[in-house]
Length: 211
Image 1 (cartoon, rainbow, N blue to C red):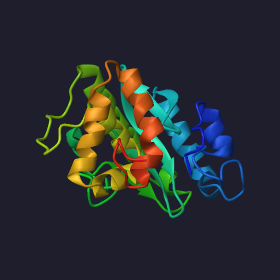
Image 2 (image 1 turned 30 degrees about the horizontal axis):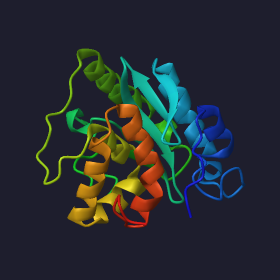
Image 3 (image 1 turned 135 degrees about the vertical axis):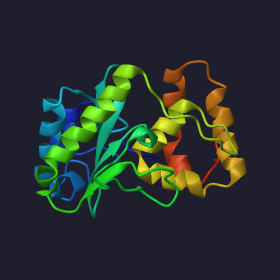
Image 4 (image 1 turned 180 degrees about the horizontal axis):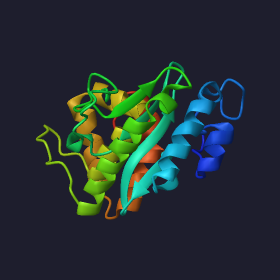
């Protein structure tokens, strides 16, 4: 069954959810469980001067033309995930890996709605650090991988832990098929569109050419 249409407006996320599953706009949506904490994160992020957008069905926060962090809600927790996490120093030791295939600790994971308020000074400091890297145009060095994945797919996988786990579980041949399918397109917009359209197949363990 294909994914539902993902939301394109952050306000919709906080009011109804991400739009990816049948729980969208129902009391059972994961965003309903964590709404108070999610709204605290939203306040902290916007007060920090970040620009709020919607990407991959989630509120995404940008600065200096770069993605800085993204919010996600799940059944057991909700998270603030940093992009380009390899640059983050994490002096408080609070960042966690989202899964066994995540290369660097990249997220703050909360299991109660008061968590973001308790950690607000740390969140603000980490956001300031990440925003500084964006202003300087700094990016982490590319790490060698067996398959050269397009930047758009790497960014989407960083922002979508469920998809990242599914993609990591694909055979090398199926991963390569997606890399070839995406790099054959000429523009980032087309590559992102192909990723969105192919998400259900990746989640089902299929390669780009499988039906």
